[in-house]
Amino acid sequence: MKLGRLNHVGVATPSIEKSIAFYRDVMGAEVIREPFDLPAQGVKVCFVDTPNSQIELIEPLGESSPIAGFIAKYPEGGQHHICYEVPDIHAAKAWFEGKGARVLGEPRIGAHGTLIFFVHPRDMGGVLTEIMETPRPGVSH
Image (tube, rainbow, N blue to C red; front, side):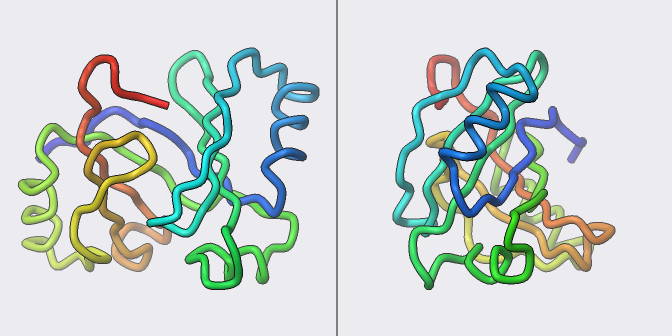
């Protein structure tokens, strides 16, 4: 397996609307995608395009959201994870597991409509890492 393209940096936020205003008004973002709910992941998501990647804004959908604890610990939000692309999600999962890394769950459909999984931060230099299969052309948010 080879390290693929950095697809996005996930930023947890208590309010996607306030974060959109920040990225538009302070950071000068010109392309901000429409927010959408991703109930299977327990989050509301919004992508902010940058010249070479994206920022994924993630807001919890209720108390049972996997990021609700993060927001409780960091009420203003903050960097939650980074996401790298791979050509074959199943080969990548086997590779990480072969290296002794803890893969958090089975591959599932993520916000870009492609398969993803997360690797435990303790096995990734302290960084929660999302691995996603490279999106096919024409499939993105």
